[in-house]
Image (tube, rainbow, N blue to C red):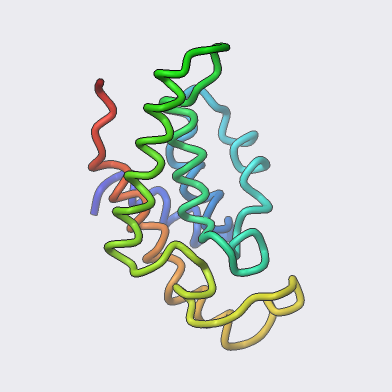
Length: 147
């Protein structure tokens, strides 16, 4: 197992959500303090807490932004590059896992925060989410960012 994949799995196993686990794995390499990263990603787990885009996917997209994001006014080449890398990741994740939506990956619908306590979702979070976290990290690690 890759070091970053192991770090992400460890963060997840200690109670951080999928987005926190992924962003927390890449943040310090890209100039973001881990405490700030963990706070920033808090609301992205559980597919924005309602089964939408998987938190592991959201965590990688934030990490891509840290790595190659557009921040200089009118630097449209960088904006295009970051967009390209984001799309590339999403397509690779979708190819490997079949979807980028939390509800599809968990095979369970999360419509509200109250749903998160359902026994079937707790089981899915325990069995499915660690693999989504690991897959997201693995895919990002294989991507090239040199232009």
